[in-house]
Image 1: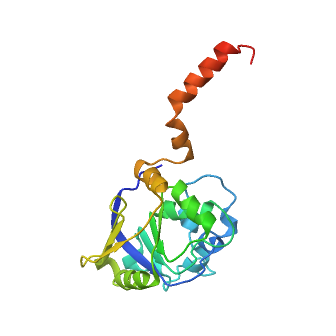
Image 2: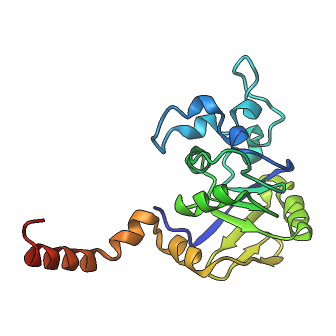
Length: 201
């Protein structure tokens, strides 16, 4: 998993509440278990018209936000079904950080396991960041995980809280497999000991 330390990028304002996982990645894209290639289906029902053409009004189709790496979103982001394809699609598109007042629990946990930083802020802070993001490509945000701060282009700083264990995992690029591999020496030692003591197993 790619570590998350500091990210400076364009933030796209998504003023929609209750964005569920079916909106993030519609069900027709769930046939694969690969983590790559899903970016094309991200927000497909909002990004594209019925004839397959782009919906020019959708924020990620606007020139300023086509390469956005940060989403500033409405309350209760990631609600609905527990599909892990949702963070896969966001990451494949290039989104590394989502800022909102709240997230659905399963989606929130899945983000950390896939190298995406979901940040919870107050409504007042969200309104400020949404206004900042609405300024387009000329206004970028810097998200510093080590200092737990979001900095705007005009120098305003927003502090955020994060669980220390999740912070450690993101900073070091550790998913569940990575955490297990940190114990590889202990596991090998245990297996050798068991093999010597009980060779019939």
